[in-house]
Image 1 (cartoon, one colour):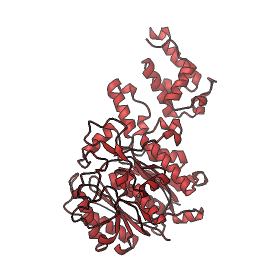
Image 2: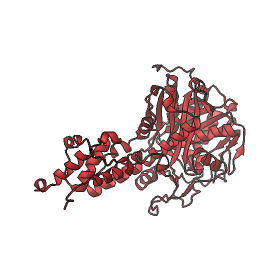
Image 3: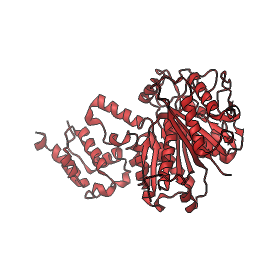
Image 4: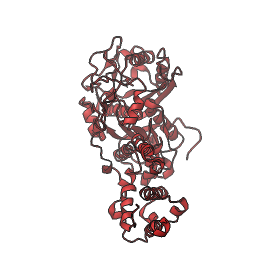
Length: 417
Length: 87
């Protein structure tokens, strides 16, 4: 029964993971590559990038939509939705969850998106201006908008419960998991959540270049968070779909694997300026503290931090300050990693993929590395897992995500051994 | 100059290319309804647009909505293309 007020005793757990990433299609391929420190960032091949100041990105090479969905759906959706549908099936298979066996109203879909159907929209806009409005296709109406992936997932799997999309740029991927937890606490059993992004195209890249935070260094290794050479980030496409269930419901259906619980969540906004960095890390630190408090855990219990890793000196320093502010002395010793150095920043897909990394680190006792960041920036003071993966028992992980415009989100994940 | 005629196979091509049906999903029987081969209302609009873009005439919405079967669509386009219409 869906209630209007959330019951905080209902617990949200992640039971399935599906990944489409530049360094691996499928969770196994991506996790294997990540643990080996293998990056998927290369010179852009989808179009000729030579006239763009940023020419490197994490593209998902070899992703064939018809491997995952029928042509009838392919023609009416963007690449971003293709990847989302593929990752959803992977997550459902991983969780051995069959939607047809469940009450449609007990299942919802909540994904994050930051730019919607870029490629589809670009093609239709070109038709509009080169040939006229009568040459724009009918499917533009449903392919571009931010909730398109959510909609197609819910239609495909018959999920009629509370659904929606969350847009908060890079923080959206954690915000949407918090939204999923809210729905589960109100009585829904299952939420397909997470998010992906497909922003590698001429128009989409041009939009990103305007944010002033992309690296223009001509090197696929240019994205180096917490490194003295930090020059900005590189973008990528892909992300992760996570099946989130209420613990009761997961146990009732005999779910085989419970990866971890979404134990705590905190979010703030810098409230400072649309683009400029805030003068200090107070708000980001507060988001982290709120998440720890919500999880009822102390700084010393955090075994791993999957950091936002902006990749620019100013923003990296702020994140280091925030960790110090929220974790105290523990900030100097807790292992920190940025596996998105191997994929690029994935916008709505980034934080869900980081959550997947955190829960697999818990499962395997292995933390994937931060690559290309061999020279610690002055005053960084963090124990960054550099170059190679590290064996480490992890029961509690903190995932931090920031979104352009001032969004700060933090999630605490916990796994009972 | 527009094509002189529009055939069942021409419609099949539109359904394959624009709606994403597989060849085998388009029946040879022209009296099958679009709804029975999985076309929703937006897919019918896409067919309407494909016809407009190819032949240059506008298909009013009420005409598109009365094209329920493959035969009705083919016949409609040929009526619009007929010399009496064009003149």
